[in-house]
Figure 1 (cartoon, one colour):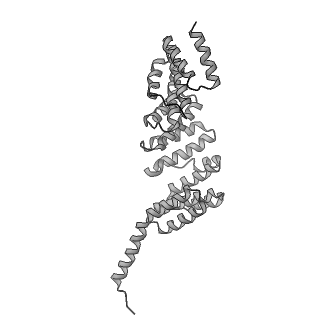
Figure 2: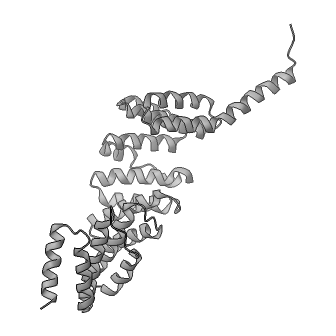
Figure 3: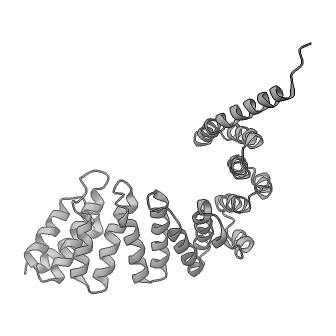
Length: 292
C-alpha cells in the first residue's frame, strides 16, 4: 500500500478546500436562481448544503437566512423563524426574522420583538435593510412617527446607486404624506427624483407629487421649476396617465401665474392624453371659466 506523506496529505486537503471555495459563489448563484423561480424546496436544500461549506460566518449566515426564507415561502412559518433564530451573525438573524414576520403580517409582533434593537451598530452591508424592515412594519401597523424615523435611517444608510434608496424614499414620502408633513414629504420625493430612474413608476409618482405640494403651498413659480424635472414628458403608452397629469399641472401653474393662453393650451393637450373622467370634468370646467 502506498503511504501518503503528511505534507502531501495537507496539500490534498488544501486543494479540496480551495476547490470548494471556488465553487461557492457559483453554487450560491444557482441556489438563488432556484429561489427566484419559486422552486422553494430545492432552494432550501441547496442553501442548507451551502451553509455547511460556507467559508465565513457571514456567508454561512446568509445561506441559512435564504434557507429560512425558502421555508417560509413553503408555508412553514414556525420552522422558518426557528431556523432564522439560530443564525450566528446577529444582524443577519434579526433581519431574516423581520422579513419572515413582515411576509406573514406579524407587524405588531415584530415591533415588540425588535423595538430595542440597536440597528445603528449594524455593519454597512445590512444596516439599511434593518431600518427599512422595522420601518415598514411600523408603517403597516400605523405607527407613522416611528416609521418615519426608521425609514429616514434606511435612506441615509443605503447606496445611492441602487433601487433600494428609491424604494425607501418612496415609502418615506408616503408616511410623511399621511402625517401631513409637506416639507419632509417634498424632501423625500426629491431623493427619489435625484436618482433619475425614469424606467420605474416611482419616479413618475414623485415627479408629480413634488410640484403638487408646492402648488398647494401657493408657490407656483417653484412648482414650475420642480415640474420641469419631468421634461421631456413621457411618451404615450403605459406612462400616458402621468403625461396627462403633468399637462394638467402645467395648466394649473400657468393659471395661477395669470398666463391664460399657456394654461388653456396645456389643459387642451391634457384632454388629448387620456385623462380619467374626474380630471376630464375638472379640466373642461376650468377651460370654460378661463375662456369667459
